[in-house]
Image (cartoon, rainbow, N blue to C red):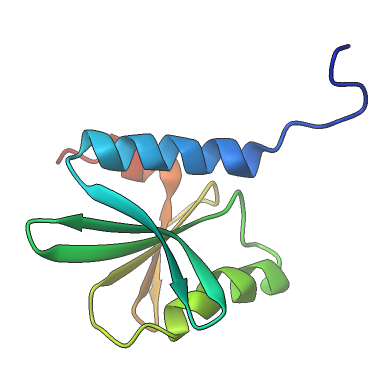
Amino acid sequence: MLLGNKRPNFGHRLEGVVYLELLRRGYQVFVGDIAKYEIDFVAQKNGITEYFQVSLTVEDEQTYEREVRAFASIQDNYRKILLTQDAGAYNQEGIEQLNIIDWLLETM
């Protein structure tokens, strides 16, 4: 085995999929920093901004808090989207949590 005991980082791969899909949908894509927190993707198209965080799962409360912390620092009302492999879609405090497969299959 060439990688030895290293496990592939599926979180980074998932981020890559989201990045490529945003480009395919015609967005300009940036990485954002708000306060001391990173936003995975700031996507802009036709004067509209959308913020994306990507995580394999947020079933663990600490992981959820880490992923949405950056959203709390954003002072505008643009869409804030958390993409995960978790089932279901939720909207809590203005943050949309979507299943990544469902999001990928959306028709734009």
